Length: 127
Image 1: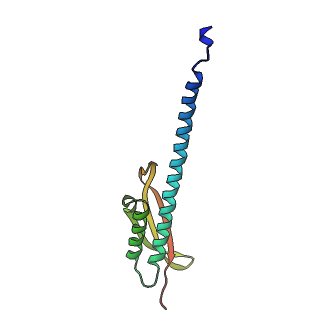
Image 2 (image 1 turned 120 degrees about the vertical axis):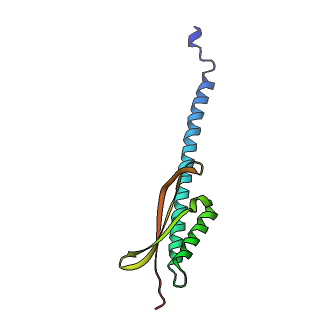
Image 3 (image 1 turned 180 degrees about the vertical axis):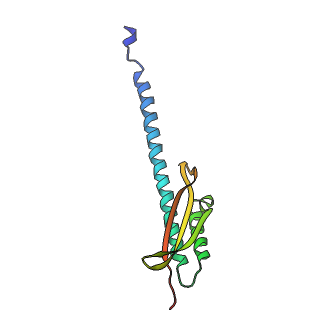
């Protein structure tokens, strides 16, 4: 019977399975990229806060350091929204650097300001 002939079904199955595996692989790679961007932003914010908290630097130096690190590692458009505030951590004054950036959805293109990370550094004094 001609309608029960399996000739050519392997090709069709290969196309369907390979498309599914390709989409799954690209999804895992995109997730890895999003985590890389998040971790890079978090590290840059923490480094900027620590740099601003040094005894011979200012808060604006910490923002500049954070922007430089992000621009070098990921790109300048991820370093657009960097703020620094003074906060209190366990009774000690500290700087908190906050970075708001796009969450990458397709490559590095993503949803604007969907990702927010903060880093803190205890303020040093020369007393």
